[in-house]
Each structure stands twice: as structure tokens, then as C-alpha cells.
Image (cartoon, rainbow, N blue to C red; front, side, top):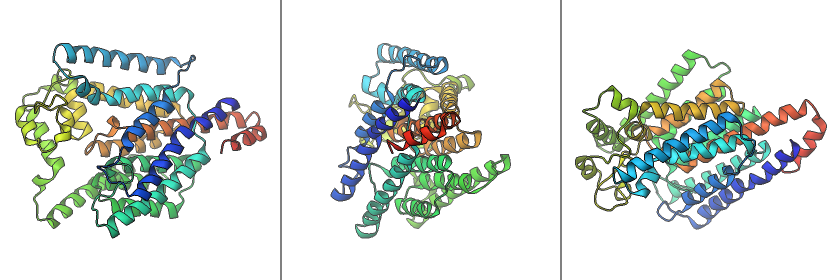
Length: 395
């Protein structure tokens, strides 16, 4: 067991080293969103950290991998041969399921030392404060970035912060205040709502049903007020907000759907109508890789809308429950899992959420760090002094 933890600690270098190098380069070179290639590196990091075969893979994780692989394969055969869907368009729409397979491997063999997680978090917050402050206060950039669009990177850091708090049982108020500063500088509405949702889970001693409802209402109110205030300040109506446009176009696409359509989703993989694609044609990077002006659900931005349209509520529920299982197996309580899912869900109304590498890597670290704590608790009951010595080696 101690050997596995030490090897896992070394494997965590695959996460910490490249991320901190990318953050330092972003600050030193003042890299912009258009110049950044950080997302590709995050994809590679997720793959290298998670995709380690385990000959003793638990049966439930194996079941998730097999079921997900069958779903991806059958969907691809249908989309490619019957719907003439391009390979790249299909690959982009199904990223959340590739990540689920990787997270299933991660949940059985990955480790992340808690002290190393704490150091990674604090260094990241420092880099965020420096880059965001320079970008916003000196250069006048309204949406500063460290790695990529801040809707993505801020969700990564808030999940990491919450997990660090959960495992170490320390709020670390000064670091939380710096994190709040970063979020305020970001201009990201969905991220601010996610932060508003998370803070009560760290500051309240008791989380019951009424508390959760209150937190959800607070987050919705925060997001709504931020949207309305910022757009009125710019002299625009609520309909001018991009996310409202995406919702209206989604409702247009599903106007003839019945209950079965919502449960099962559209045919794998159905392009959006010409009207919707033309309405969103100014998002050139979200159009189909075919280059013919067509587009798929990725053009709607919101992962919730995309998942319902492409996969239906049944598959979306299965994906969510699988993540809940992996988090539960890593030792997290119901309240902690609820907070993590809440953060992801709030962002899924705005951006790609489970379909991007930043959320996937945050979940991988969450699962690995949880497993490290579980093994530490188990081993300390047997050989506490020897374990503590071994745990300090990789830190």
C-alpha cells in the first residue's frame, strides 16, 4: 500500500509540474486567450494521469468502462455511417464520456498527496492574482485569463480549493479572500455564481435540505443580478445576453419534441437547423469541422442543453450517477458530492462543463486525493508512524 502511495505521488508530478510551468509562462509572457495552447496540455495531462491500466480493476468501475465504451461505439457507428457525421464533430460531442472512462481508471489506481495539493492550489492562486490584476487593472482587459477562457479555468480552481478544504479541514481565510478577488476580477458570471454556491458549504457547520435550497436560490439570484446589472449598465436588454440566445435557439430546436425525445435525445448525431446555425454563424470556431456552414449542439455552449439534445435525460442521468459513484468510492460524503456536482451544474448552464479538460482534471485530482486520504486512514490504523514517514517522502 505504501509503495502505491509513493508511486502515486510521483505520478502527481504529471499534473503539478506542467500546470505550474504553464501558469508561470502565462504570467511572464502575458499570454492571451488567442495565443494560449493550454487546453491541449490539460487534455494530455488528464490522459497521462488517468490512463494507467489496472489488472485488478474493481467490477463496478469495469462495468462503467464497458457500458460507456459500448455507448460511444454504437453512437459512432450510427452517426458516422447513417447520419454522415464527421469524425471530429462526433469526437467533440462525446468528450464527457471519454473522460468518464479515464476517471474510472483513475478511481482505482491514482493518488495525489494532500500536501502537494495544498501547494499546487496556493501557487495557482498567486499566479491567478498576479495575471488577473495586471490584465484587468493595468491593461484594461475585461476578461483576463491564466490558461484559457476564465469560465473554464476558474471552475478548475474552485473545485481544487473546495477539495483542499475538505481534505485538510482548513478554511485558510486569507487564501479564500484572494480567491474571491480573482473571481471578482474575472468578469465571469457563471464562475461568480459557482463561488457563491460553494462558500456556504465551507462556512456552515450543518448542511441540510433547507440549507441546500437556500444556497441554490442564492446562487441563482447572484447570477441573475449580475447578468441584469451588467447588461443594463451596457444599455442592453436581457435578450441580448448570449446564454439567453442559446436557450431560445435550443427551445426552437426542440419545439416539436415529446417526452420520449427528451428522455432519449436526438438521433446520434443530429445537426442543428439552418436557422440556428445561421443565427450563430459569428461563432466560427463552433461551426462543424466540415466547413459547410452546418453546426451541432456545441454551438449552444451550455453543456446541459447540449447533453439533453445529443444524449437525452436518461444518458445524462447515467453519466451524473457514475460520477457520483466514483466520488463516493473516493470517500466523499453526500454533502461534499452535492457541492462538487453543484459547481459543475452551475457552469454547465453556461459552458461545456463535463465536456472540457479543466473539469475532467479537477475531478481526477479530486478522486485521486480522496483515495490518498482513504488509504492514509487505513494504513495509519495499522502502522501510523511508518506511514507518516513514507507519506512525507514525496511531499
